[in-house]
Amino acid sequence: MRKEDQIREIPEEDEELSPEFKRELKRRLADADNPVRYVVFSDITGDGKWRFWLDVSTDCYGMSIDQATLFKREHVARAVAMAYSGKRKNDLLIAKITTRNDKRKVLRYDKP
Image 1: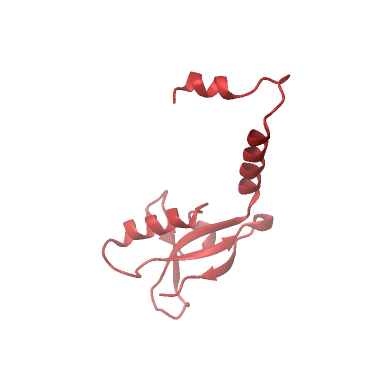
Image 2: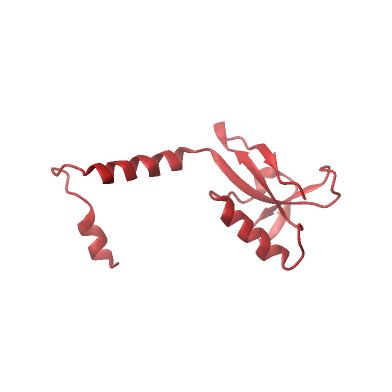
């Protein structure tokens, strides 16, 4: 779709929004407000004492969860983990976290 076509699809201010358009806007706003994110990490000892968090922007690992790259979708985080681990199975794992109050807290760790 061309950019001009996308601009034409947006209703004018004086036009009434369709119910489908309103539902889609509400869904996208709720999705944006959801504090759940996913991060990729490596548990090098296997007991959870040493976790390194993947930072995709610098292409390296950090020792703090605050350095980790946040992913909105779990399948994207898994695809990145697979790309970084190559053919090694269970090399990188996914953690489900919350970013509520600008603090990162782990909700669930993947098990190797």
